Each structure stands twice: as structure tokens, then as C-alpha cells.
Length: 456
Image (cartoon, rainbow, N blue to C red; front, side):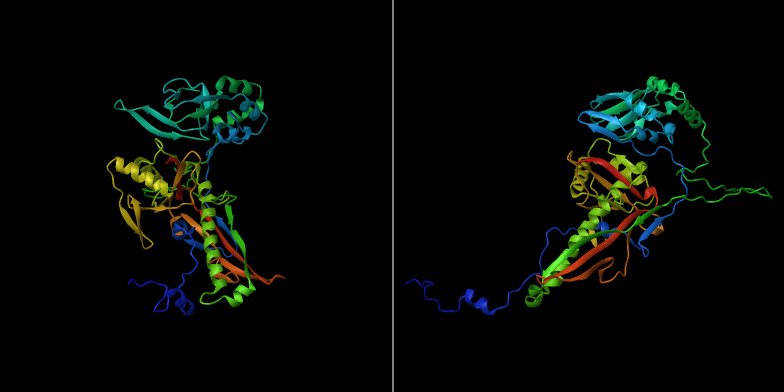
């Protein structure tokens, strides 16, 4: 005869659970990431709430990028943006609008030449969108790669203030490109009708620029290798007149917990403490996002134009990474989206290379040339399926990138993060204001470099 469960001979587990304590986990949160940027940044105490970055005075002309108004398929350069070019730097007048109106839009397919080496310069090229390679004839027949131009860059502007001459290299479209061309004939027509612009160009053709070092800083006069009693040069170290100041930003939220929950359901875990813990995790995630993407202080928007590189072909090759880390001394960290790290691995595998590993903050991570390659999902991926790779040198002692915060604020839970009791409302709901104060600063331009337009 077969025994069935209709007449149990012992206590069932469902009934036994009524007298047992369930073993529970703390509340889990799927959106918590590794937050490598918060780990690697040295955090500087900003007691006054504002951090001023004093630098030596730099003399730089036209080192920015141009911006354009794009309506459908038509593009137009913003007239004031033409002063990014050294020849027009500092000029103000209606002539800029006249020059913008004379620009002609052109489209180029990959492989087409925009300009050819040794041919006369007949126009200034403004790159609205796309990537352009600079190539020249090499010593042994093969072409020499001289770098790339991309969105907001220009070429041929030397012909505005001096003799036009010829192109010393060729320009070839690497992707589909939209370009605005300003014919030199049209430019001279505007100049002939504007005494103010003609006078400005005459001054720009023989500028009285103070001596500079290779970094663009005002030169410090020194003497060495002398004997006897020669007259030593006099000098002083000039500073920027209006140094940049960083104010601490804030990420905030109001946490609400019903008093009944806080009073009656506090065992075995403190409900208010768990709510605060998860809220703090969310604030830290937002903090890392802002440190990368904020328009005012985010690293992706505050890299010097001279430290922005473009990939040679699209995918992130070993050559691109080598060029990125060679642009600054003592690169300490590379930061990339996980998909970008996968793309780097694929390109290395295709060449028979196998990136090594290293240890960073107690974890084993991938490395390139011994530099930790850290994942960060906060780096955005564009609709065109491209992203960026960051190279950082960190710390005040290295003149690098630093995080800014303020310790010792009232009701502090963690450094520069607090939870302030706001009271209990008529519905018996307890409220806490949870705030995190932070910012980031790049102390010198070469502390941060970005490899842009990385194709995934």
C-alpha cells in the first residue's frame, strides 16, 4: 500500500515557519555600479565652498572650436565663432556676419580630398561635422599621418592675414563630412569694404606677442652656462588675471518615511537606516554622472581642445591609445564605457595583442601599457554608437584632476553628504533632506585627455 500526504505523520514546513525567524538580506539595489571615478579622484577639502585654480598666464589665440547652426541639411557658422581663428581673434563688427553669409556648404564622402598638398590655398575650410585626416607625402613613398580634424575645427586660416601660399598637406575625408568653405576672393571683398577689418588684419600680421614656452605660458627669462659678471635677465612669473573658480554643486532629495513604519517595523533592521543607505547609494551614482556630464564642471565638457583626440579609423586601436597617453606626462588612469573596453580588446586581439592586468584599489583590472583601464557606465554612448575614452592624471601634487568636497557639514553621514531632519507633517510622515556636495577641477590642461568618436 502506498503512503500519501493526506495523513501527515510530522509537522509540515509551512506550519513550522510560523514559529521560526526568517533570515533576510538587506534591501538590494541593482543600479549600484563600481563608481571607479569616485574612487580614483583625490578629494580636496573646500572649506569656503569655492575652489580657485590659479595658473600661470597663457597666451593662446583661437584654440577653441567653432559652433554652427544646423537646420535640416543646412548649416551656418555663428558669426562670432569666426573669431576663434587667430587672424580674426578679438575683432567685433558686422563684417563677421557678412563673412558667415559668404560660406559655401559642401558634402564629402569617405576618401574624397578636401585639399591637396602643394596646391594653392583658395579657401578656408570649416568642418561642421565629420572627421578629416591630414596626410603628407612621406620620405619613402608611403603617406605620413599628421593627425585628424573634426567637428568645429578649421584649416587654411593662415591665408587670411598673410600670403595664401600652398597647402603643406592634404586633407582627406575619413567619414562623411559637412564642410563650410569661405573663398578667399569673397573674404577680400569684405576686407576691401571695411577699413576696420583691414586695420585689424594688418595688426594680426605683425602681432606683438610676449615670449612663450612650448606650453603657451609666459616665458620666464633665465641665464645659464655663464662666467664672469654678466648682466642677468630680469623676470617675473605672470598669473591669469581672472582664474577659474569652482563652486560646489549639490545633488539632493527628500526622503520620506511614515512614522508608523519607523516605530513598529524596525526589527531586525532599522527601516530609516536602510532607506537612507539606498538613498545615499543613488546620490553617489548621480554624483559620478555629474562629474562626467555636467556642462559646467563635468570632465567630458571641460577638457582642453588641444587634449581632444580622434580615432584614426573609428574603432579604438592600440595606436589611438598610445597617442592618448603620450599627450600628457604620468597618465595614471584610463576610463571607458564597458562596451568601449570590449572594443579595445577586440582590436588588440585582431592584432595578436593581449592587454595585461594590474591592481587598482584592491581589484584586478585590465591595463594598457601598465595603466589601469577602468569601466564607467556613466560615459554616454551617442545615437551614432560612438563614445569617449578618458585619460587622467590626478592629485594636487601632480597638477592633475581633483574632486572637491567639504567635510564637517552639519548632520554629516559621509564626507560632504548629510541628512537633515525636516520634521513630521500632518500625515505623520517623517522627512529628511539628503544632500551631497561636490565638484571637480582640472588644474592644468594636460591633466585630462579625451579620445573622441570611438566607434563601438
